[in-house]
Image (cartoon, rainbow, N blue to C red; front, side):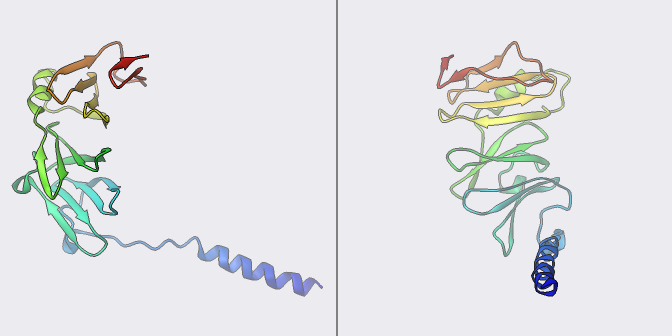
Length: 180
């Protein structure tokens, strides 16, 4: 009887051990990646893998890389984070703080980048982004270290959201322009 119980447990143990060996592949510039220093990786709603690097952005389709840099339309080659919004636009948040996004096969500079630069502290080389969000009205929200959170409307109206500790958690009690 004990031998009959031992065999199923050995089979289960063998199956469980096999689950601890993940399959992975290390990609480098030799494989087509834009840069070996990768800051952020996301998978978008279409299944592409996007990688933010120190020398541009790479999009991986599972077989090959397509790379983007300033010559492709990025506003800065040093990209720290990538974000997909509700429309499927892929936003790039670079070192300079000037935004751009990928839509319909093209990289488009954010039309209100001048508002971001004009409103950042003078000593800042570039904003250190802490949070990013685009709502369904196309308002862009960005949390910046040692500054706080700001909003830019689609018309280019800049608004700093006051009363928020720049190092802490904030909850914005506003939805579709209505305060709650």
